[in-house]
Amino acid sequence: MLCEQSALPDQFFEIYSSRYEPSLTFVNTVIDKKNQRITDNFFVSHLAINELFSAIRDEMRSILLFNKGCPISMWRNPRYDPIIDAIDFQAVYKQTLQAFIPLFEDGKTQDSVIQLMVEQSPESPDYWDVYSSILFMVKEAKTHDATLLTSAILDKADYFVTLDKSLIKNAKKMLNDQYHILLVTPKESMNIFRTKQKRGWKRPAKK
Image (cartoon, rainbow, N blue to C red; front, side, top):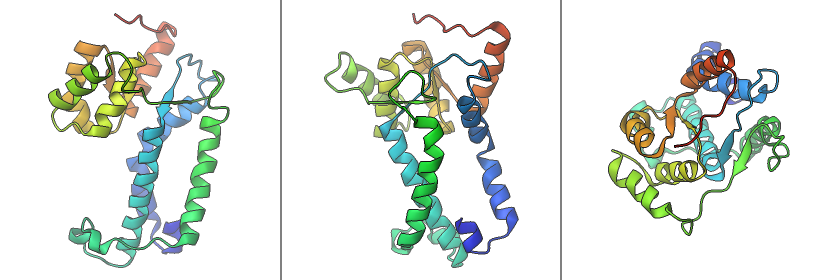
């Protein structure tokens, strides 16, 4: 939408969309999981959704800064953050919600494509043991990383899908060895789908 309003060339959108092609393919496959014969359950936390809106805001700012000809070296300086027009915000917000509908419709039922997961409470047994081990032992781990991973671990998730390659590099072995959860990219997830389709969809038993 903003690309069209700013009269940016088609190549801008093509380069931008190609960057997220593996993620889009993953999400579209999950949406079509019944036809794909995928029997796994998928969950996303409220915190992850909050981060998504934050990322969309930052991308909108980047487009505005680019269109204004602001040097890239200044993009990280809060002084140059552009004001997002209220009309543009509402339009992008509505588009985002429309994209969420096929994912989270009836989000609290087993029949939904992706179920909203409530983050684990610090009152849960083992919460602080898991959380602190991630925060202290995983290089460059941030508080939101530790929060999301702790919830996934305590909910006994088999996989944690992320685009954070640094997190995967620094945490993958430790989390797999200690908590039996595997960090994967969307592209790796697609390979897992294909492998499971060949072998039959059987959820691995937690150790």
